[in-house]
Length: 112
Length: 123
Image 1 (spheres, chains in turn orange, blue):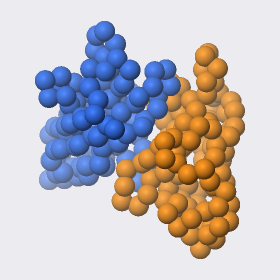
Image 2 (cartoon, chains in turn yellow, orange):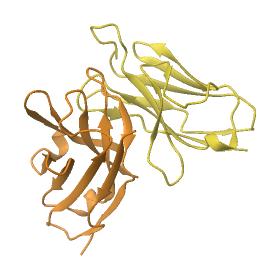
Image 3 (cartoon, rainbow over the protein chains, first blue to last red):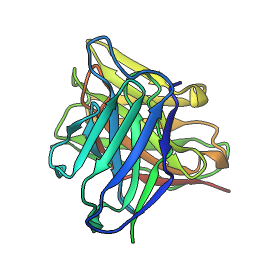
Image 4 (tube, helix red, strand yellow):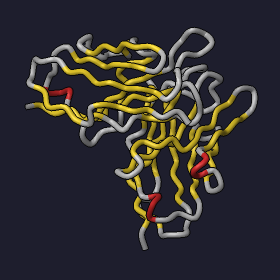
């Protein structure tokens, strides 16, 4: 199975300040078609996870442009340019290259 | 816009069978481009993929090794839904269970989730 490792475990951010989350996979997520199947999700308190970023850097429908994703191979980053109160929750990376789907352990983002 | 509505009991006794259903609106369980998943979440295991069913001219299933001997995921085309059965449950199966849709092939992108069902295994 592909192991997904996220850091840090938690972040406390002042509104308007940036935040960054790292995700590393135990093997490359690059597929033979040139796509890299790395996704980012946000689980707000009491809700189901919601898709933010797909294929490393593409924002899903309705996701604000303050969210951006980058990386390649095995190293990936989610950045929030200016954190807002509504961004609190747990962020997860997920690999969609091979079954079983696997998720990182999560990064909890809270507001200072 | 696809919506997934979960139903099923929130309490199951040890050694019995956990059964959940996920009703689909806005898509078809027989779609040739989607796959239908069950995922659970617990403090000890985090988000854990359990398995999937999908149709590509015929039906396919994949299951996580950790539950492979106990799990069945079935599509129900007449009701446009799919189900999860997990046999011989123990307290370690206590979790929030989610159904979900994967809308890409290749590349397993989960774009829609059910509301989640907390299932407690206890006598």
